[in-house]
Image (cartoon, rainbow, N blue to C red; front, side, top):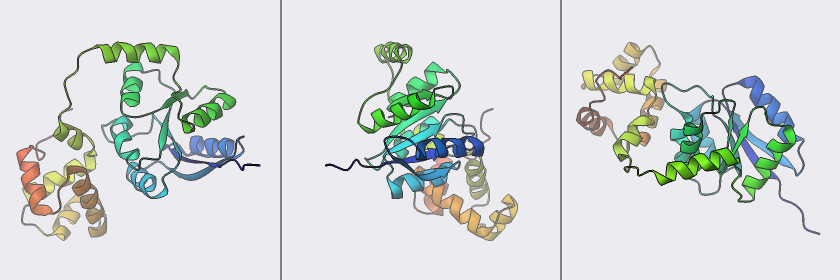
Length: 228
């Protein structure tokens, strides 16, 4: 008799009560599921997705990020080649959901969905199915039928930066010769926190040091105020 594999699930949501409720529901689901991680911080989520390689990520679309949508992080969350993503949303924003599916999500579940249906969506997505309602499928057909220009790779990289990271980049450009300690004091953070931010910035922009960051930021005008 074959033993059914436990489905390893990761939750991404900055709503702690929602995460707790989902963890309880999925941990008691049939077939068996294990919540291997739960976080509301996208930096941690990217690291956990890469190190834990969960089978399925349930991603809360209403997770609050600095002036950007969670959708821009989908390719990075899927980079391990193992994980599949279910979008969990209470807002029927068809355009955003279509963008999410085009970025790699395999299923969509509403927050008003019955527990059994949510579990079924996670299971089917884990098995490789595409779980979308007919209205969303129709929206996707319409979107795919429209000619679209290829996205600018630099714009995609820059879009992944948080507002805090943009501010730090601006400070680095303005004080090009300043020590990390001076910049950290100006940003009201510790030097270790600044180093953590720089590691994230380097990774997102594909640079390796402060000089390359200065050149990249100057070329792409990242020191200028962000548009409201």
